[in-house]
Amino acid sequence: MNKSRGRRRGSPDTRAEILAVAQRRFLADGYAATTLRSVAAEAAVDTALISYFFGSKSGLFGATLGLAANPPQVLSGALPGDPARLPERVLRALLSAWEDPEQGGRLVMMIDAAMQDPDLLRLLREIVGREMVDRIAEHVGGVDARHRAAAFGTQLAGLIFARYVLRVEPVASMTPDELIRHLSPGLRAALAPRR
Picture (cartoon, rainbow, N blue to C red):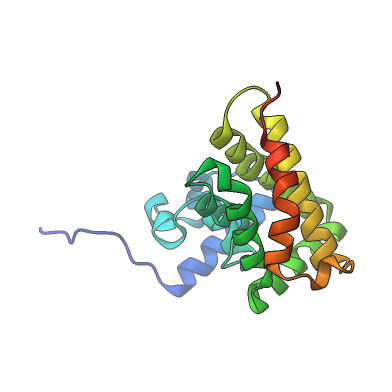
């Protein structure tokens, strides 16, 4: 008997079931405890099918929230390059994602929902810590890398909250280039190793 080779395609119903299971698992167990294997087992699919549909755990998380611009993936795309220009790259990537009319609205809705739902807030806090602060710390390395990465992330979170949630002026109406020019020095200082 000659079995066909390759990945199992799965139907749109299979994809929807995977997303439903993943959303339940992320909210119930948190980001760290939820594995692709546990989602696959509950959805009765192969782990490779989840990877085929979503690429990674952070991709699956972004899909459960309906985010095409998944924040950890946006950050990952901005990390490679000249270390001296990291703040500008991260700011440009962040602003690009949040300025997108469709995705920016979904990101704001995610923040609003997290402020009202303790489980989602816990999950979002875990994502920021594990998928963003830890990645930045690993990327910059050195003494107190995680503390420096957290200071960097705090400034980014402040920008997001001031510009997109509270809409504080003049931050809300500044152009991306103006924000990058004003905020890059502080972000660079946050990442600088202690002397």
